[in-house]
Image 1: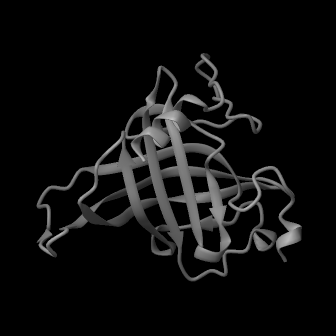
Image 2 (image 1 turned 180 degrees about the vertical axis):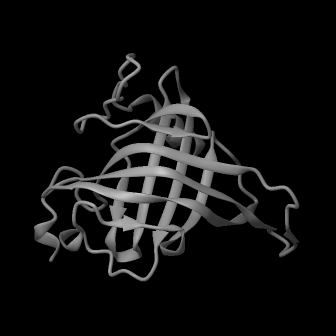
Length: 181
């Protein structure tokens, strides 16, 4: 699995060097995760059946340093064809299901609390959804190890995401959303 992650990391689309937007091959997108400017890549997707938004990103100067964020949208039938420009998801609508910085060997499960910010839909096309992350912040609520023991951090680090990212359908990267309805 680690080898597959490393090979994937080396095959990402190149990221621009300028200080403006970073291009992930879909019209310009850039994210700042925990203060680090990074490039969302072509493996970022929306999974409608799980109400999930999956972010995969890497640092422009070190493609092996990656970020993985998995979000779930609650209370919505998360159907791309029903999304509209300007639609906003607040902390009450979101759950961070997974957050990983770098390559980790996981022997535990983490649960996070979304504490602030929002996600806004910027554009919707037949094959892509662009979303803006406005100071989306979350922190570790509880960590459970393989023995079922829970750890509740007293001063959990607050993670933040800002910027834009483009997402494709998880079933068909460059295709139309319509065939799935």
